[in-house]
Image 1 (cartoon, rainbow, N blue to C red):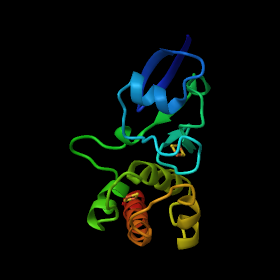
Image 2: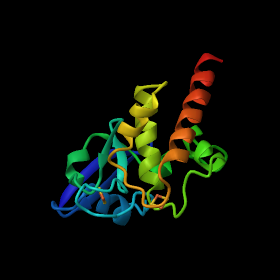
Image 3: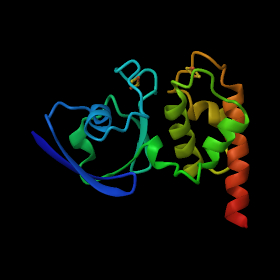
Image 4: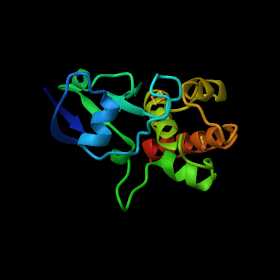
Length: 159
Ligand code: FES
Ligand code: FES
């Protein structure tokens, strides 16, 4: 077994897992964080996207022990009961999702983009979502929501 200690959604957490365990499996099975989804399991769909040290990664492709000593943020760490992240609010306002399976991964990719680039162009948003497959929506409402969230975040920054 391998001991993995990390900052997970703002709290120091640890788990003891077999060395071949992926980050996705550890999040879902050791911590019951089931927001990141198991889609393709080979890095193609982005349903498992989480942030490691602020960078979006496919959790199905990382081993759990690769996040030892690092910061991991999942969709569960974005919101509290009283607070939704502006990207989440905008996805709700714009009705950006249909079945929702891709949603946690798309939202985490959008957060990583806006943390890095507060005023992205549409091609930059498309590029940021290029690893997230959505079979339902055609992406247009997601892009509108991400632009809106970007406007809100910039306004907050300058308030
Ligand atoms: Fe990880 Fe599809 S489940 S990329
Ligand atoms: Fe169904 Fe994206 S909303 S896969």
